[in-house]
Length: 216
Ligand code: SAH
Image (cartoon, rainbow, N blue to C red; front, side, top):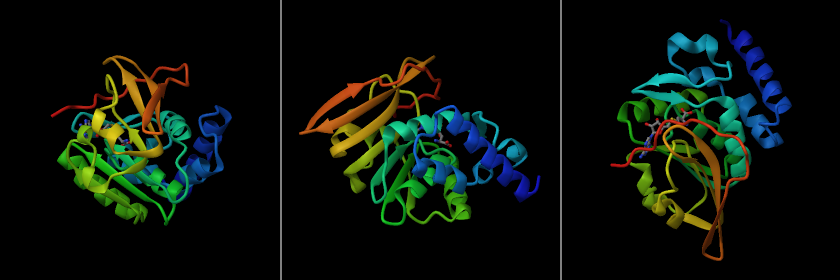
């Protein structure tokens, strides 16, 4: 498949995500148009890069579905210049989207528990030309204390509740978006910090299925 074919498919996917209200801002639309999902897919699946599905990326993990990512990014509402953490950076695709959203004055940190994925994602981000995203290998349930605080935190794996260190490492006025529920289904939880207090809500009716957030 030529790069022109892939580009056309990328544009089509963005149209679909806008029509279905998953993409709700120009900043998020621009990011989806800029980031080449094919760079984050296993080489044998490149032709499916713009199919709106999750795909295996090895180590029993998946690259998230574009629809789900768009909805999460909408709730997260990251803006230019912000410092953002993604827990469970996997292939690096979501970090690349966030890196476009926050722009050159912002910074994205990704943390991943599987070393092979962490190494692969570093390569993927280089190919995409992301230079404001930095990846760490480790357990993201503990957050990333050496780079705290974060204005936005995105948890990309299913959890029963948002781990306490993430709440501690969130800036005043900051937001966390996380898939919260049991093993089989989760809803997107939005946690906001105001005057040191956390308020949590499930703003959307839909359910999702994420791979589990592991605790070490
Ligand atoms: N957003 C990524 C992948 C999400 S899949 C993408 O689109 O490619 C969720 C990822 O969370 C997996 O790569 C898994 O290895 C990772 N993960 C699970 N538990 C974790 C933990 N405690 N700390 C960091 N990463 C974790």
